[in-house]
Image (cartoon, rainbow over all chains, first blue to last red; front, side, top):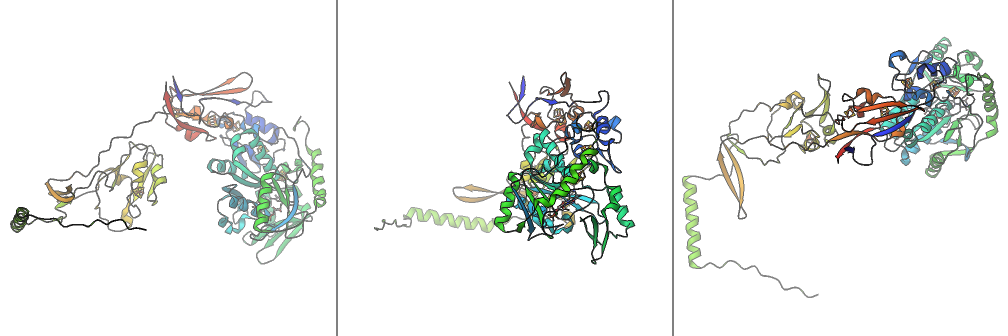
Length: 352
Length: 251
Ligand SMILES: Cc1cc2nc3c(=O)[nH]c(=O)nc-3n(C[C@H](O)[C@H](O)[C@H](O)COP(=O)(O)OP(=O)(O)OC[C@H]3O[C@@H](n4cnc5c(N)ncnc54)[C@H](O)[C@@H]3O)c2cc1C
Ligand code: SF4
Ligand code: SF4
Ligand code: SF4
Ligand code: SF4
Ligand code: SF4
Ligand code: SF4
């Protein structure tokens, strides 16, 4: 008899196979029938991150071309998809601290507290890479693994992009490389995806150390929003900031010119998965950050879990940011607006 | 504090016999040198200094032994080694002698014994770019014009260095016994993170990994340590990067 030596590895193990509602179909067809085709899909790409076969995005939809031949029918996608068995979350959740912050070191969308949190976590040694959603010159998102604070010299890493970013596929890559841990930032749907990955697989539980969520009401598919902005006369080569405040979409150009229009105008192109999304504050995150709730130039920071608390304490100790008061009640309107979307969830498609 | 008593170094005391002996020896050496002068200078390139077996010179490479583990390129402190894709899709080392500091860490780290030391230390290049040595040029020795007729060794005899000349060419290779092969098998280091995709079982050319679905919705994964050759393919292809080669212990 021969055995592998050392406690490091095992020669035999078991994997729980998830249940398959449509028994004679592949798991991908199950996912497609239950989530993608019912417009429940948030495009969080948790499925694509775990899928060894090739789940990807085709146009505005998550898809798997050639799934007939390429899907390995492993079931990982349905195990991790936060909307396969959808338990909508809403509200503000429990928190340790609710504050307004403005980084002294970085510029960002609001107070650049997201950047500050991830960079401070790097400096503390809590993580060895932070995943940022940067963008190219056409404002399509691109993922960056930030390992040194100096990389923040790329000024497009901060700031809000009103289009989806492939955060979770980048996270899958990052957990393979990391020695200390990974920190990420994403919209609430992405945060739910990370938590699902962590719930299912130890590799994510052990290696994802900081999850920062963004307040989020809606997002757009790149093709739709870029076409829309171009029709509005926005020149991407000059566009430096996009923002949604007080019901208006504001595109700011490098020469100071602003293109503004009512958010109602883009309602038609809001991604379908956002229509059933009830989570405004990313309740499952370690800390969430947004603009409502604090003064202009500040980010509202909701500190929920211990890792985020440690980073905030570090920022305070090093005096990397100014802090002020934030008002939780200012979030109520958007929290309730999103909670109201529960009615859009088709009861037999969602959790039953 | 009291000083310790010092020792005085006393010069040797010669008696008459010793004095005659040393003088005769000196005259003898003088006469020998006037007839057949002895020189400590090595006449390069006709004479080469014989290098010891641990001399660190030009590096040779045997692609058949390379397992493309990248160890050499990782360990190289001078960043002289770059792995380049060969026509057979494998990655092999190249050495930039413009950077190499001849530490031979690469040779020491080579898992397959594919890198070999030689005693060649006098390769000439036209320019810096030519010092980049692609894999093809590492397999054979570079062209050497050998004019050496003798090799020179220094021997230590009674605290003295003695120069010894030997006719013939010095052998420039270093023969090192191949590293001992350690049998390895694939194991799973994080079973909880296995997604059950069976990619490992599909790629294994030796049928060593089985994945069978049992009733009640569990997938049983098994690596047959008797069949596994430790080739590492499953380790490379595993979707979750949770397989690792481990030493095999036979009972
Ligand atoms: C789609 C979207 C909708 C939002 N809606 C609201 C809202 O309704 N109300 C509100 O108060 N706040 C909203 N926010 C959050 C707000 O715009 C700011 O991102 C937040 O206040 C953080 O600002 P900051 O200056 O601290 O961050 P910064 O330091 O500028 O960092 C922002 C980080 O967000 C990441 N990021 C940017 N775009 C995306 C994206 N599309 N997907 C994933 N990550 C991204 C980047 O990696 C960047 O590092 C939204 C954000 C997004 C991405
Ligand atoms: S909700 Fe996320 S995980 Fe589920 S199908 Fe859509 S992209 Fe994939
Ligand atoms: S390969 Fe696995 S994860 Fe990918 S679609 Fe098929 S069942 Fe889902
Ligand atoms: S509203 Fe925001 S969090 Fe919800 S699905 Fe859309 S992008 Fe994701
Ligand atoms: S001898 Fe040292 S410096 Fe030269 S290639 Fe090998 S490892 Fe690099
Ligand atoms: S190491 Fe090679 S032989 Fe062993 S299980 Fe993996 S693929 Fe098969
Ligand atoms: S390839 Fe890796 S994740 Fe897939 S079944 Fe094999 S061990 Fe599990």
